[in-house]
Image 1 (cartoon, helix red, strand yellow):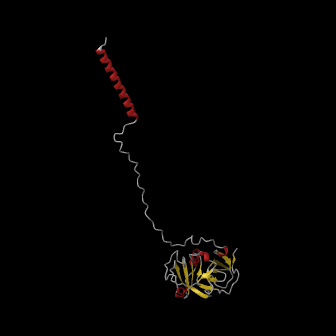
Image 2 (tube, rainbow, N blue to C red):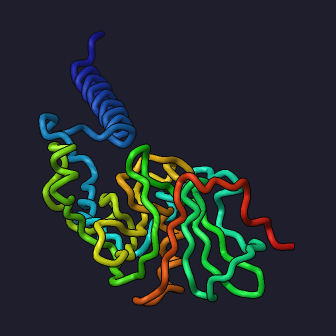
Image 3 (tube, rainbow, N blue to C red):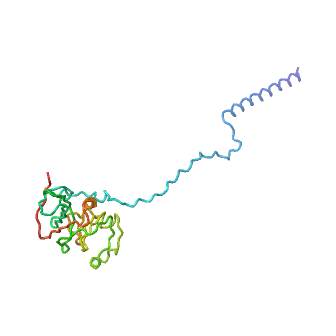
Length: 235
């Protein structure tokens, strides 16, 4: 016979069991993967601190001769060297050997310092005896009127510096327009390309400049007086 009370108790037990099982399953799922209440809010990426900006530093103006300008591979005979050199000129005299493109600084006792130089092109060589009347470091350049007439594209004035064709040092000769000076084109040493000035590498002209005083005698040999290798390397 059907017992209503027993059926009610059984149904109540089944329902409580189902609720318990559901609660356990929900708790496990929640622990494994928390539910995002507001899934449309995404986490922000890690904040990266801005890198410090390095202040701009303008390149320093060059005040000393540059090794780069004299980095051209120089033939051995045009490198500065002490050589045997017979002359009657007193120590401290400069002798310009125009035809052989050498400059000699007389040391005495049959020796001289020899430097490779560039000289005047055809029609622009000269000879004679002068003296150093002025010295200048990183000299400015004002081409003389006769040079402007021949080359009107030249600047009327150029401040001293690495780009100046007079280079690092200049020694002015008497009341002439000629100088012994450096160059920003060291590949012209040993060549005849100037308008009469004597050019040296910046390194060599700086060395000579340190040895020479105002009043130093300068002897410029004529182009016709060509003699092979007047100086031989001192041993």
